[in-house]
Figure 1 (cartoon, rainbow, N blue to C red):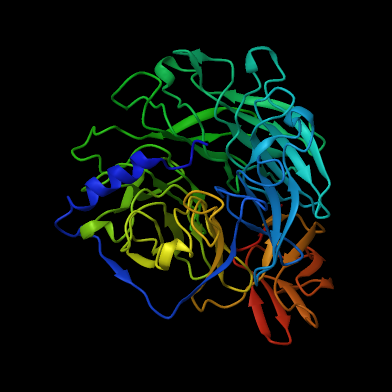
Figure 2 (cartoon, rainbow, N blue to C red):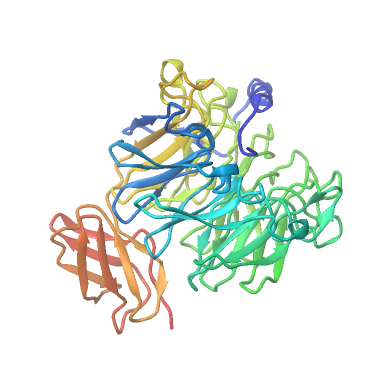
Length: 506
């Protein structure tokens, strides 16, 4: 799969590590008072090689996928409790000719309670699928890519979906589309309804030299104004090098399909490539700006960056990895960041760290101060995991959960089959609203921990009528007179606030 790091990555890491003789001006510090726990080691029969992150569901458990392994060797969907009990729900390629897909990616839980995702290959045409799977493990293939002549509808989705405020899902494919360029196709942005009707909104490489970008590897983020923001891993008008094989872009696209390129990463157009390049990721912060990573570029060793970009396209590089001797601060971040309840961002690098090219977990403030929280392969034979390539998720108990590509206890895979882990930093519990915006009267699900016995739910101070469905779930409606702000739930153990403000729509 495209995100899996090969041996060359590690070789390049080794060359960088010993080339760094000084620290970068941006400081990095180590943190203490934390607990790292390996919750599960995959053994191939229950999956292997995890490249996708986890999602916490309304029942309080975490759901995810493995890119390989399982009954048929083509990946799985699994459920894992916060304490580490794993259940395999589905093994891909269970149907003849893998018409149900192979190589699943990131899941999301939709407002109807089901999970939706993409598979990078398989399907009726061998070019990937979009699927739905219920919590009870019934899988439905909603769409097979390359259903149109010439793959005009796209092929090879590697990113998860996002459910928009209109209830439809939006996503990207890395290949296919209407614009062949240099023997390749630039990829697409699409919309699909919950019932499976797909509309291609944009085909990349629509501009000369793929100035609008090519190969969107990651998914989309919807902003409050309804527009979507995303990235391409290649292409862009400011990149030196072969046309159509540029350094990546950041774009905005309207729900109707009008695309604007906000920023194109330059390949060393500035001395030392301080802006970074290749495989940029994106997440929207509570301050309205976007934060992300690049897998290459940055000073002094081109080991990747963390950046901030405004909605209008002004980019600021906050941190360049491999700033410490031997890259003890990490190298090559491949996954999006997550903003936690403390306002800081948390992420992973697939390489670097004090133990060698095995990766790290880090925290970075909005202003760019980085702290390395954990270095993988801290245990003998990397039983704690190796090479994290997916984003972290902060569960409503306050802890972080994540996955690694390799490592773990099993010897069934060369280098280990991967792990699921938990990192506790002492951050308190919170509640999370499923959908972060809605009109007065809209149904809202509130996820949390130990919600039984709750006595109050308020939207920015306005009390709402609610029902405690389960210890992890409350249902409510946006009350009349509510205004945008935090949702607060009073439980027997105290008052919990939502991790992000809820926006009341007019």
